[in-house]
Image 1 (tube, one colour):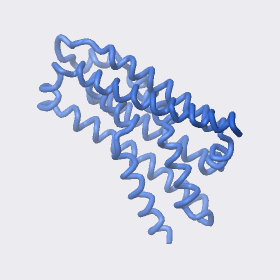
Image 2 (cartoon, helix red, strand yellow):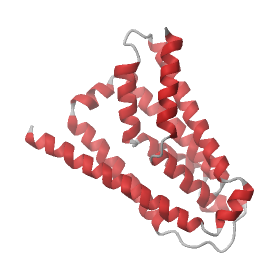
Image 3 (tube, one colour):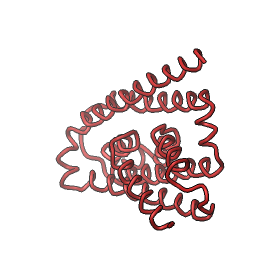
Image 4 (cartoon, one colour):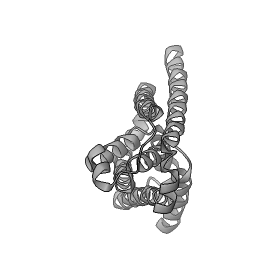
Length: 216
């Protein structure tokens, strides 16, 4: 029974993580701007951020988020503002004179900051909140032992981290990376626009939730 449940979770997770979203955009943005190592640390931060969603799901907080719309509205607004901030930075990207070496890239952005950016991005990712809300209320059987649920959670965290590490690696393959380096600032700007569009969508959703709260 648990194997079938795990396979369902793995398939749903793959479809969710492979679709473009804030995690994808941020990993791509920082991998192309600061290189493979920083991109991988952002990916590790994203994977670790999954544990936040797992923790509050196991504690039943997803039910609270679902029940109290003002909590959901707060998460929406925080996520929107954070994505808007990252997007505004990316849009202001300037042309790069030459490809930096590892030391220069490390000086521009530390591994800890890369990890923190990934962690916060996923932690405030409303798409992930909705995914885990559905997962722990509709897919995972309430009778499933907590230890099994914890195992699911660790799988989701590791699988997410590995997926985005793979993305950061593929985007920074030397032959590919050298070709796009000169146009990296345009890719930054495109990712910035994408993030700001996501920000705008979340703000529209936030207004819709606020309207429901006011009418209720």
